[in-house]
Image 1: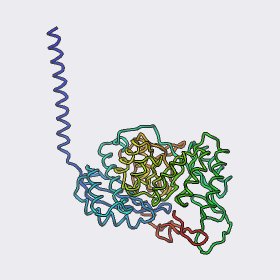
Image 2: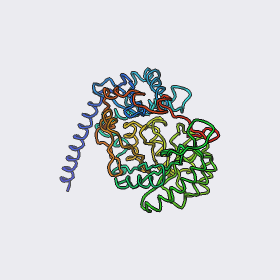
Image 3: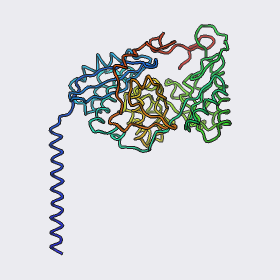
Image 4: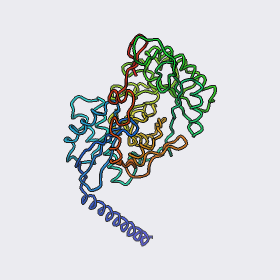
Length: 444
């Protein structure tokens, strides 16, 4: 027995010695490879399909090691570019590229006044590029750096729309046929500028030359739409609807109550950020799930809604909040409070931004749903390795980092303004105005 114990001890000692030798080898290799430092910060500004996309390229002092991040603020893209080039670039040159949270805090505080959309997007571009670099160093996709998958793929919703209700139904059936189980439905009001839908050729009497929108006309039409969709599409399809902040707070309370029988997956952005105190009244009066946050930039906006459980889905545009670093913390807060994620994901989020959304979707337990976008060929020409959308699911790339490379020569073929039309070109990428019949401006 004693001899056997001595042999076991000798074997254990040998294993321990081998482990110690292996650990020392790793330590030596780590000491031999210095931390990468930021050598340059560049901006890639491109609009392959008319939507202004801003991408930050962060280059390190190690050959071939760089990363991309989304800084897309389409409506004020020309302001984000100098914010990166003239302010963040000189601040970052020479700093270590492997201290992501530390650099985020430094950038966030560097302007003194903070939580604005221009600075947040500039920070996001750098932040996401740092995560891309970290993934490339590790040889892993970013979602693995966040803890790995909580699910196999990312459930998405499609955008069904039409000038009238029958057109919306047919559009929704098209998404269902392609495998989507969640569909956002939007219908136009004849002659009016409805969000995400056509208006038809009807002329509306008005006291100005701008597009017109009347909240009461929209409300009646929206309720009829949702009733028809539930009756004609069945109970197994999840319905979503976007108000887009265009009605008054008390009208939002009424709408949430009126659509309750149609069992929406969520009602999106019923209030503007200026009216968030009204969410308490909505919560007290209806069980309709609420999604909010597309226009949020500041913790002062999302913190009270999540903390007090006044919404069901947080819908932040990740670059508007400052990138992946703050949004993974927002997701963690939401998990503690029973609030799920539904990150903003239309065409004015670059493919890199979509990849960041997907990384969070896969790694966060409290994922709810993801807005989808079918990348056009010209976008794929510039951004090689776009996330794959199949049967209503997004699938992440298994390549290191975001798994996306930017063809900078192709990006230069589509400068800002080259393919923009209508108000996007007229207002330098910004939105136009929408007014009531009497001329009152409508929030949007």
